[in-house]
Length: 121
Image 1: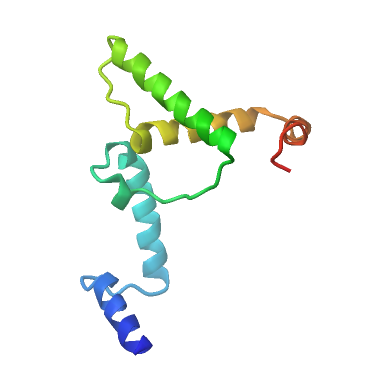
Image 2 (image 1 turned 90 degrees about the vertical axis):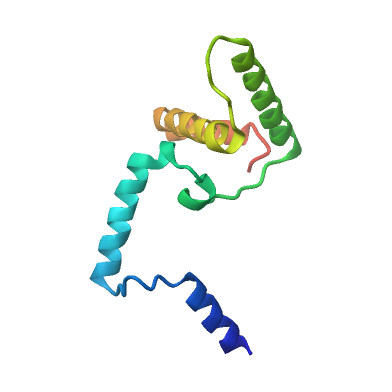
């Protein structure tokens, strides 16, 4: 029965139009990555076109994240900027991008000191 389920899943998710193996598969992944990065911000369905990352936050960080999103959404709504802030499409990528920029600027000692001053370790 397990083989039958695996076969059905393979049939469902297998791409019938191309039979890629080895080098062809690597080339297809490279092409997909470059075209995805160029159009990622214009993706119509981000759940299908973007990668998924799951992570866990403690209650304080989760609360702060929610509060920050609501505050930013309200500020943008009250301003003359024509942006309908969406949590998954706009806010989460913004948080990650800004966090990565900040981490690139930090020395390893700064990161260690920060982590030691929190409950993350």
